[in-house]
Length: 143
Image: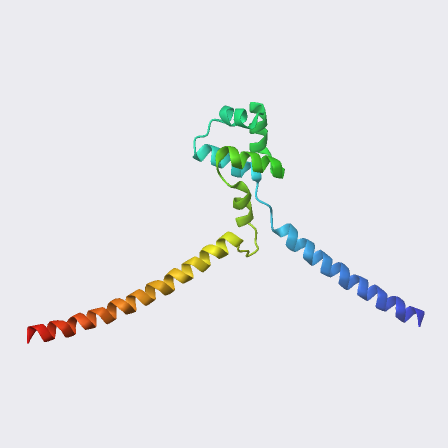
């Protein structure tokens, strides 16, 4: 009986370990974007002067170069750099997540688009109706 209990416990533990290893493989398979590369690419593509950026951040020039080399930047660094460059690096990183997520602002815009599309359809029907009326009036006047 004790032997049977040990087999059941061993089997359960193996299933948990296998499940955890699958989850860990999934997580490790999804690599985080290189934050410094995002920054370096933005700086290069927009011809940003690194010395000027360093002055805006109140940091040494070498700090900006270190940020560009770092695979992971702290949130306060991303925040300050985003403000200094007027570019939302946090949103850019969020967009690269393998998770579908709609921000409240995006949802608001989607709702506005839906309302505007409904208004457009209503106006198209109104134009069609008015064109029919114009055709009737032309027939009356033409006779």
